[in-house]
Image (tube, rainbow, N blue to C red; front, side, top):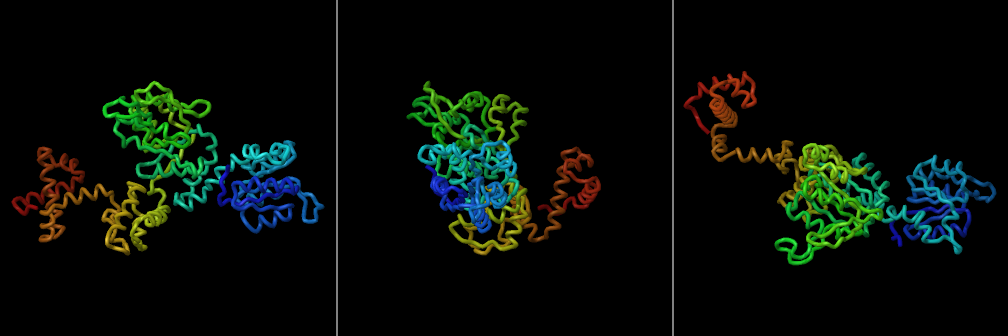
Amino acid sequence: MLERTGLKTLVIENDEYIRGDLVEQFGLFSSFVDQARNFDEAKRKLESRRYDVVSIDLNLTNDDEVLRHDGLTILPLAKRNGSRCYVLSSYTDKETIKKATGIDSEVRYIKKDKLFGSNGIDPIIFKEFIGNSLERISKNSLEVLFKEKFVTNNELLRRNIEEIIETADDPKQKIMILGPTGVGKSFFAQIIHEIVEGQANKNFVKVNLSAQPEKLVESILFGSKKGSYSGSIRDEMGLFEKANGGTLFLDEIGTVSIELQTKLLTVLDPDDDGFYEFRRVGDDILRKSKFRLMTGTCDDLSTLFQEGRLRQDFYYRVDPAVTLSIPGLCERKEDVPFLVDYFLEECPRAITIKDDAMEALVNYQWPGNIRQLKEVIKKLSSGKQGNIGKYNLPLYIINNENPLAAKDAERLFTKAIRSYVSKNGLNKTVKLIELAAFKDAMMQTDGKISKACDYLGISRDKGYTLKNGLSKDEGGDHV
């Protein structure tokens, strides 16, 4: 049975008995069902509020119950408000159907007599023709999820997600999520699962294959029989079984070994009913499990194939028609302020991000993407400062540097260099380090200036300047 949610539905129907049946059936998944008995009433209601779902009868009268209107004239008004529309009619001529779908290709045209049994609308038939297509909407309104969990403000990414949802009727349809490390592929996979399968379906099973010991990946996926390997003291259920009835997300699918790719080939090919067949490690029993398969990767699979790290048949087996490409955070800077607020709400200690700090966070390149941003906010929240300004941020963010490069600089800044800088200033310190590096490069290249310059990545003019400085500075200070 469908669960009530926040959806608002309008039933426009001339016949009061049919209207009553439709209100009852649509009410199974709507928190609010409104009704209009004619054209004029429907027009007034659509102009005064927005409905998520609108059911339209083609044969309508006006308030005087005299003039008959074609219900299709109300359809553009409903679509203008973004409503999902169902046209219910006794007409079966192709011209009428063409008119309805011509106004909007997403409109569902349903013949009334298909919905009715001997005692009014048959709930089973209603679910088949209407309920199944609306179940995802009623349980998982995309906008509701976007409000509850900040996903993205990036228009292209949102549109990509919506397109996947609209084409995800077949559970056998595989979905692949592409994006760099730290971009939140598993988060987006779970969002899609909640929308497609329903938030009530908690069976979302995920695993990052690159983070698992190579020798154990097979048993993690397939499960294992007691005694099948050293340390196996009981029968273990694998992720294929655990995902039954839900979604299995295999992240970093490109890291699977060639040997395991061979074993996965037959498993990742579901039968006509959508069941995946497999055997636990060390077991002869053939098992079945039905789930939606989603995969993720930060690699270009075609490149892995060309490099011989991916079997051709496995490449075609996991390469789906439906993909979600998630750009790095540096390509969707508009998301940064909302993500900062989202992560701040998760922190146990409240802090305030000042405007100059937020500007620095937005302008930073985020090589580690969302994962890196989350860690930064977490560390800021755990510190002593409550009002975070720009200069309370990590130095590498202020300077817009890769944190790994910043750590290299910290390692190079030894106690000896720190002491020398404090006594002699930065300019003299830099000059001495340049001279020391040039001297070493000359030794490495047998005294050839051109090769020493290439070795250091400096111009010839800079090299001769350093050579002259080295001649003058022989026997001088040392850092």
